[in-house]
Amino acid sequence: MGFVQLTEAYPWDAVVPYRERAREHPDGLVDLSIGTPVDPTPAVVREALAAAADAPGYPTAHGTPALREAVAAWFAARRGVPNLDPDGVLPTVGSKELVATLPSLLGLGAEDIVVVPSVAYPTYAVGARLAGAQVLVADDAEAWAGNPAVRLVWVNSPSNPTGAVLPAEHLRQVVTAARELGAVVASDECYAELPWTQPWVGSGVPCLLQRDVSGGDHTGLLVVYSLSKQSNLAGYRAAFAAGDARLVDAVLQLRRHMGMMVPAPVQAATIAALGDPSHVQAQRERYLRRREALLTALTGAGYVVDHSEAGLYLWVRQEGAGDCWSMLGDFADRGILAGPGVFYGAASGEHLRVALTAPDAQIEQAVSRLSL
Image (cartoon, rainbow, N blue to C red; front, side, top):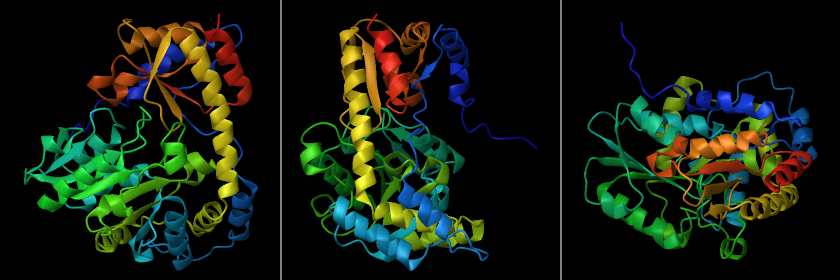
């Protein structure tokens, strides 16, 4: 019996030597690589989790009606989507597991194509390979419009790793082209509550489900969202997908067989988090301070920051300086660890991804080291 090699070795293993190099700095390591939240989980969320801790029975894979209604209300209040059917909401165990399994849950196979962005979270492509499907790397709908083999199209806005935001017009073109093929469009919008530049601070990051993108019809559309970033709930694995209720039901039936259920206390905590925008704003202000400090230090040190309009990262390169690995070494010599851009596609080998998710004291250290 053999095993199918779905992908290369886990890419972050290649960073270990740079981590050790950075640890040798006299003042220690400042880790700006992975982007793990470090600030406290909001009290309102922890209290809700504790209050729901007596949960002897199995939760449902579809989540409680209260959870689904809370997600629909959040989409109306925060994402410009007043017409989301609560039956079109599906709680997930973090967003990554759904990204990895969605092609399989849709029944895709060797004759089918999954479209992924050219600079992207690698799990989009890993999920396609897990299903045995083909991967097409493309950013514009023109590259695949009219191709009947296209069955799933991933978009990611704000982008991980670049922080770029797709305007509503771009999303609308994707939806139009996909609907002509009967393909599903899945939009990873996990950083949507963290915009930094205009017009997104004022108008909000466009959502796949909003009327001027979807035409008010959510057929074939699915948004993936996580509370890890905006609410510091990475350890809770609190996330959900939402959109086409019939599509959600088809995915749900398979997930019931798989036992993919979000624990009842986490569902209660999710409701509390979605109902309390004040902690999201407070966290956004923390990240904004860190972003401004790092942005100033990086540009002052001669680096160029591209995109980075939203999200938890700065997308950094050095003019005429070659690849990300040499930059990673330069950062490591300062005791700073970042993420190699090449992990996110061949088109991003000149960039580093620098996370805002470090305590204030460590951000200050990084700023000081970059200023030397």
